[in-house]
Length: 342
Ligand code: KG4
Ligand code: ZN
Image (cartoon, rainbow, N blue to C red; front, side):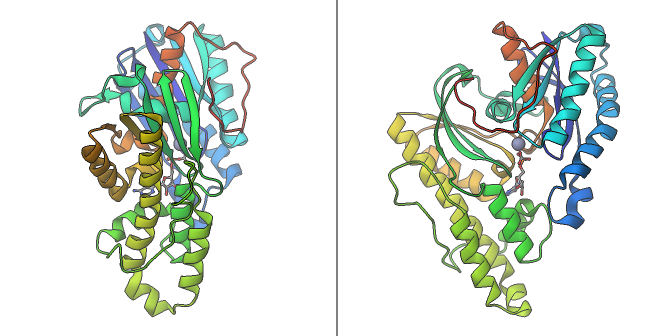
């Protein structure tokens, strides 16, 4: 089976073609980072307009890259939840129209379920593990989400922990804005942290002592804002690397501690980390150390499948088609985010 996936939930437009083994036959992403950079965050109206300009040319590009005609495509998978309504609708209407005109099967995919499946993709340079039918823990960390799932098998998900306020990516982005780094902040904080001392500043790790697996990042952000407000420009500049490294470490420690506690409590021995923040160098290193220490299996996708991409949507849709699921032309969108036993 071969499926074409479409992802337009936030600010990245992406199209990909994937086969039953999870092999990515072609993928293209049009990033809008530069368009939104002057505004310091995603402007929904601009995101929607750019998706409608980018999407059809990307579909043509991907078909050409895979050297494929429409008759080889068995179905179309599209992100229909959660996300920005004006962004989701561009992908959804395009997918529904193509399904109708080209006479293809259609399936709506939850964006978070896509992130969950991203580590199991493969291509010429990456081969994912095959354990998605076995129980595993999944930490989804992106600009909009920070959630811990217990996955019994494909399609069987239980939310066991989540942020009670800001997402981890949001905490990175707001901090970066505060110290004048620009948008999106996560990759910039990550890069600058390489030259900094992670214990130079002591940031709080909220909820580290709580018995549940929930997290909180807004107190950390407020603490950082207060600290930076007391510094002059030269002090911020001179301490930038240490500030970034220390702030990053507080986020990473919180994510890793909660993940470890949740896995031990739920008897899980395999871990998947996905979403934009899983590109973070310190998080990847700490996750490797954790899994080595406790003899857990770890799967974190390469950067191209960490951030928003259509390959993960195509693969998730394909597995749903294989399970006998499909959507019809009444498929609608939803901004709501919880993925529970879908
Ligand atoms: O999954 P994603 O591409 O989009 C959403 O669904 O939100 O995640 C984007 C988020 C942004 O907040 C960005 O700053 C963060 O992922 N991010 C990172 C890194 N690369 C991207 N955060 C920390 N370190 C990174 N290297
Ligand atoms: Zn995402």
